[in-house]
Image 1 (cartoon, rainbow, N blue to C red):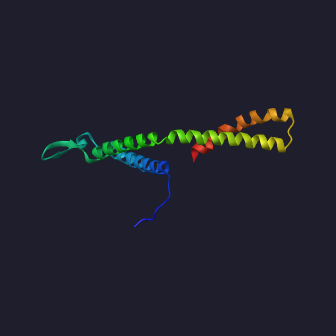
Image 2 (cartoon, one colour; image 1 turned 120 degrees about the vertical axis):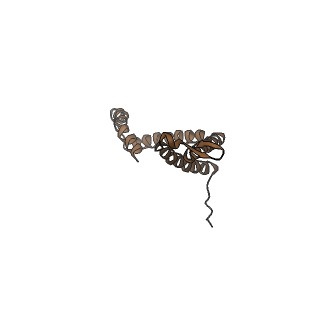
Image 3 (cartoon, rainbow, N blue to C red; image 1 turned 90 degrees about the horizontal axis):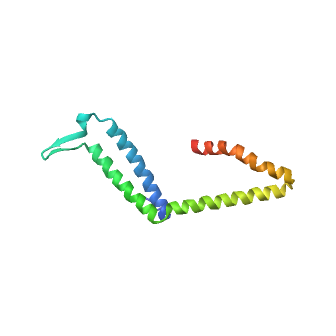
Length: 129
């Protein structure tokens, strides 16, 4: 048996989407390796798409349903709200740090350009993970 894990509906759907995306990538690679002759299999009823093609289509259908469910419960909207809240927190933190350091107006003007200069490296580091 498995152990229960407390998750929100959004976390559960996101986990299901992540697994389905991995399955889809695997099936897509398998379909990509098929020759033209292997794209269909012969059965008593005639030619049918290869089992990898059928599985790929089935996973695509499930991903579509899971994505709709995620949109219905507002996952994208919640992620946007979290990003906005984090941005506001970061702005408040920077303001508090500048106040604590008692920066002069001239020094405060240097903070924005310094952040903009460092931001590409931060974003690149985040995307590399």
